[in-house]
Image 1 (cartoon, helix red, strand yellow):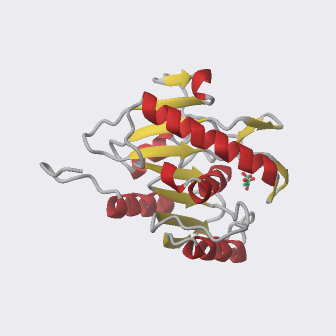
Image 2 (cartoon, rainbow, N blue to C red):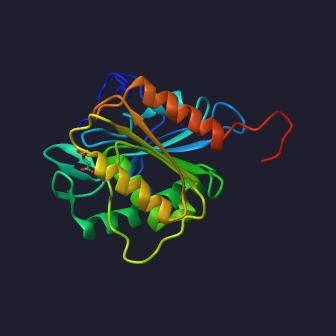
Length: 235
Ligand code: MLT
């Protein structure tokens, strides 16, 4: 699904810090933190988005945070995605696994380049980006401190039990989402509970498009689990 421009907002004009950096493997945008001690966000856009799509949402859910936003490398009918699919909701599992590995490598290289402390990145993904964020935290938990999954699906069925060691996972689902059914959301939440995640599941009165309520929920969740340090405190 293309990213809705209302809430998430695609930015037109003056993209500063646009860094198409093939050496890190992904074209991406990085915005340094504007508040000391602010969190670090990994923004993963939906189908048809790009590295600019989620920047306004990132600023809204974690004001002052550093934002790392790669562009998905698969192009489907002119739209960027993070992995291939055969049809809506029918994912190419080999491709997903390989591209999750590529993204984990990007995160590690970008963390070095931009001085992001190990294990501090929190993913916020929408739709296809949420599915990639879920795959990343399940397969490479050490790359992320947590993940906000907005309109996410079950990306794959783990073959062996997984343990993501109480990392917070927010699942933001739309009660009227025509793409992600309520059963699939329940399955996603159960999969993360089984993987020892600290799951927060929120149902928004919305469809696949994000609403202001989603942004507020994500903001509260960020504050609860990844709060700014108090002045003088050590992280
Ligand atoms: C999308 O259109 O992005 C789907 O709903 C999710 C996906 O294909 O990963």
